[in-house]
Length: 373
Image 1 (cartoon, rainbow, N blue to C red):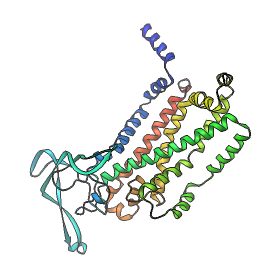
Image 2: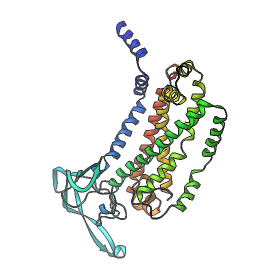
Image 3: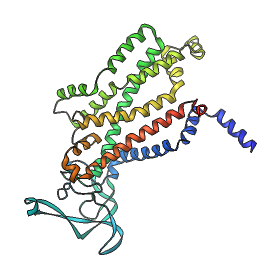
Image 4: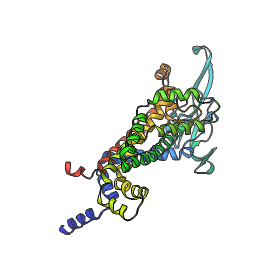
């Protein structure tokens, strides 16, 4: 027993910074569960073309099932049970009760069996061209989350929306991360009048209101811009206005660390300023930078979602969580088409998972966290 305790102590004192952070993070059950949810959502976004049964754009709509309710596969009904899950077919007809509008009716006599690894619309996944999808039905279409007013599959749109929102957040965070390291590193290492000028610029950027800025930019965006150009434009702007907070933290750390003995030793050995900042100062708080990156993700996703929701960000045919939330603003949807809110649940889960993982990493990266308990 004593030997085991001694071995644990030796492992603790010889562990790397990453190992210590992981050991503390694993003890946080909430953060671990949030990390699992986040991993699942990221994988769903990465493999969205394969997991979704149909093209999420107009090309993948079901004209015979507009504003259709979610179709839940079943194994048994009044006609008996089947070892293969199935859904019912649908028919459309005009009804006098609705002033001769088209009405969709369920045909319980028409079983449509769910199949896995079916062929469908073509897509590219990591540069590889394929038409294989995880599931489908032997005839017609299946809509696990229902359809919207144009017949587009909400399940497919949700997966692609997660992918788009994560991509916008990743690009925006990377841009702000690079700018924060460069600007904050220069200000903290050199100090003096350089630091003063940079802090004035930082304060100016922090005072820029995001919504009026995007309203002004949206007025000048050409209507001829493609969805891809609008996507990169939104990501770049979010990155350009999101760096001041991390830059201030980098600056504060470097102001303290630049007078340490290991920095002086590197300078006396002939190392340049860039080398000292890159090889000695920034690695000294790598864990905190990683935590900041994780915590910044939900705010980037929230910004993109809010801008797209009010019509200043991404628009159809791009699928993002903000674009899909636009469809939930009418009272008709609230009263009759509640399945439109299913993507909202994924949006909440994505943001909350990032928040809990970020909090867990922040506590794990704090070397004094154990002493406070």
